[in-house]
Image 1 (cartoon, one colour):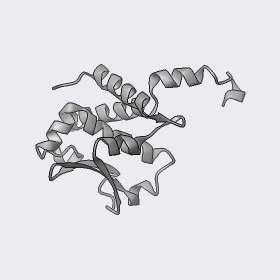
Image 2 (cartoon, helix red, strand yellow; image 1 turned 90 degrees about the vertical axis):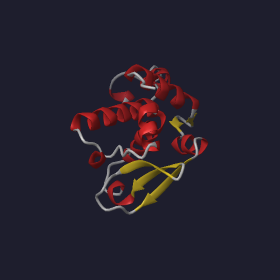
Image 3 (cartoon, one colour; image 1 turned 180 degrees about the horizontal axis):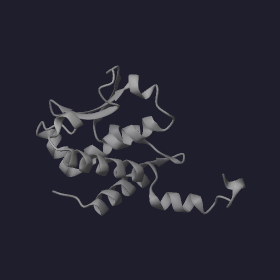
Image 4 (cartoon, one colour; image 1 turned 180 degrees about the vertical axis):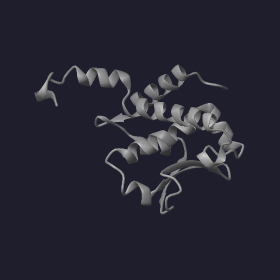
Length: 147
């Protein structure tokens, strides 16, 4: 089933709101509840994060080599991005069929950009659900004091 861009954003917001804990979305709980195993390893410069499907199970592979040199927040965004590949029906379906979503596994740059753009949008909305963001932003003082 193809999901529209708006559907992807709504789904990410819904999941994000359901997993808010101590002002943050609990990404590890989302993964656990959906039987996705997070694996941290040394993979050189091959990728930062990758969702894979192997023997009927999903794994998020996190590249310690790349994430150690990344800025704060990159780890959370990477996990959220990979969760996007899981929750977006078309992406999950392709992974189950053994089709790679990584850049090297896709024949056209345009198709790669579509998958990555959808997963990036999912991640941004998952990490910062709209309703929670608006509610919290109303409590912040305007101007320098609020920064």
